[in-house]
Picture 1 (cartoon, rainbow, N blue to C red):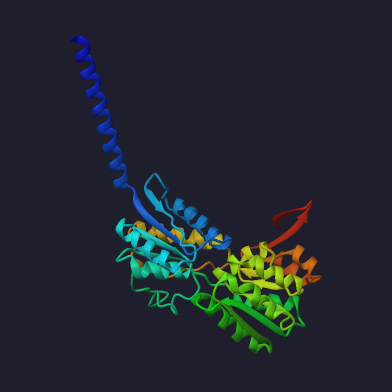
Picture 2 (cartoon, rainbow, N blue to C red; picture 1 turned 90 degrees about the horizontal axis):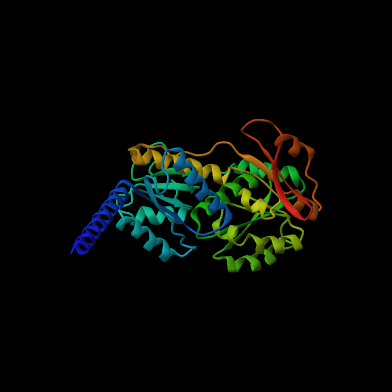
Length: 346
């Protein structure tokens, strides 16, 4: 009889302990706000933005498993995935959502109800009608503008290739941000007497044919901040390298992949700023009154290995300008050492 009583007491204690643990779990879950991060597709530039967002949230005091739950689906370039994933954040009552690249932000803005939406690098927030004004967004959307220094990028191209007159631009026709950067580049280039030839794609499957079409018709290629081209950059570079045509991308990650050179805003830094803004919205800021921000410093990146393979001399003026101390210009040289690529900053 005593053994039965002890068994009943032990069972009762176990049930009480289990109940307390479950209550504590539920209480903790209730305290953790849901932060939804929706990425348009996978490629190094967008992945860097994502890493920066996590860092920015942590800077603001928000860490997954401590006081926030992070949902991080990747649509892999599928529009139907973007829609369903955005709707899922609405069903989970997310406290704030973050879109990485324009398509993700547009989907969140359309599908997430009244949940605040933070732009993680959108080139043209006004042209895509995501905000009414950069200083006063006026709705549930604010965040970070991906404002690449296109005049500086064109100047770099002209300094390295002063005799080049025919420039090809590869971009995705359906990508509003990429098309916006193409138009700005073309306007600036034509003012300087250059001929700009656009080559549009609809998917990565088009890149090889477009690259072959350009061969012999252009002396250099400019690539805006374009998710589709970034995903297929290896295919583009294979064809352009065979034709000895240098590629000047807008994003640093595409230079690391084999592009010749760029002057650009750091994707990681844009992510950090995005995370900071998301944290401020979590603390009570109203997105309607929170100005759109952008990273104003940029870096010069030169792929010396690509320059050697294309037999292109990088002028001393570019190197010296890149070596200036301060936050405006940095130098990142990609060296080939013992068969391995290393990245160093001087």
